[in-house]
Image (cartoon, rainbow, N blue to C red; front, top):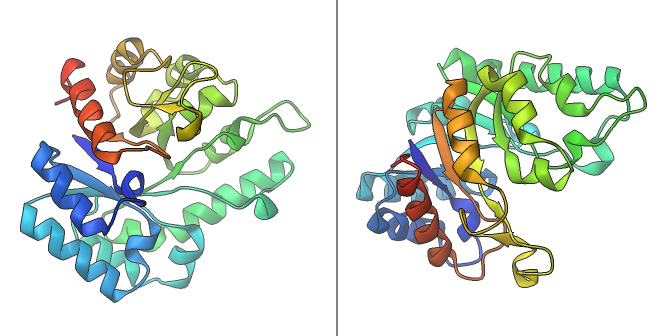
Length: 250
């Protein structure tokens, strides 16, 4: 299923309005993020927009601290139709510095997800770039995150920015990649006002080769369109939908 990460529209009005706009474009689903689950009012507003538009929310980003502090959130997310939660980040001050630390951190993430799994919700990790920075022994944090019983939402563009080869990771761990963030990287020196990101299919990621490789791996359930800092969120949303249709994802 294709989806739209609502974080892409965080600077363009109320999240509920973003749900309505992307639903009108033809997106069948959205992905929520932490601020949308911050309190009962935010959750109710999101749930109302989903119900009004008939939009699904099969995946969500929720912070580790939130999951650890709010065990009842698992039932709320399951009740909203969430099938998988991906923990998206850890602050620099909390990042381990060696393999043992990363393995312990991965176990902590898996433990925090036990309540979700009890509700039938899958639990995984969403990468940025720091998970591909070499550790003293030559391994990278992502190696150790995947040692735990966690799904992986692969943000390929962040991996490329870190100098990683996404094809190699797909070949080795494709059975763990249950969701993908579809984003693109602008050519060097372009789109500085958008932090160097580009609309899907317009940059240098080569999605026409990556989509078939991910499809062959066989585990991807959700293709989530995301842009970290678009100057026009609906321009990006339209481009993402066009790319998904061109690649046979929609």
